[in-house]
Length: 293
Image (cartoon, rainbow, N blue to C red; front, side, top):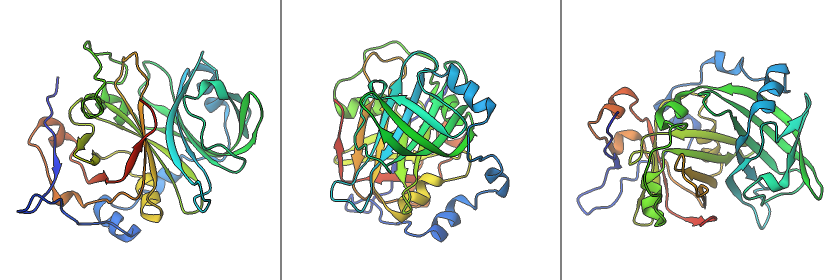
């Protein structure tokens, strides 16, 4: 097994965090590089036969919900949904999601953005579907598909998502954050499109609660960096932290504007994990609220 000590944002001589901020797409791409054009070829605007077969086998989804960010009660949340395999059904253009399958269904309104990541136990890859709420009835949420594509296996591999590690799950928030190995990051673009991005790392290296700051280092993935592009445009985010195998549900956090220090301002650990997948960015959230206990 790989051991991992935390890497932390740099601080000055007075203990204050570094303030290198990424506030434009140009600055972001200077750190991450541009998205390879081939990545966009993976994206389709409907659910093909392979996607529908994937949904029929999936009992688990992470979901990002975003209301109109111009509204008085605007918000972005990350939550979890689940049921028997095929609990979410649909056709080429629409999905039908039971409201009872979602751990948190707020904010929900017609026109709200809906980002989702569907997983199949034991499979490392995932299916990402970005959509928009078309209707909400007494039992179901109906969404119109805007984007669909397969997601690489890196987050699942790094987190050992399908491996339950024995031990008690902490109830203290800081200890729970430190024990988490999988994170779902929900963001919404300025144009109102939701994105749900998975992150994974060993316990003690996934995320950290440092005083009143919640942060995680982002390691290389598929290089789409949709989440960080969205944060540059509007900084409100939702996060769900998971301890795989735990009997308790994920801890969900919603935030107010975070800042993105360049990784050159982060003090990296010298562990094997950092050597294999050196982080490029660190997301630091200074104003946040816990939505689930």
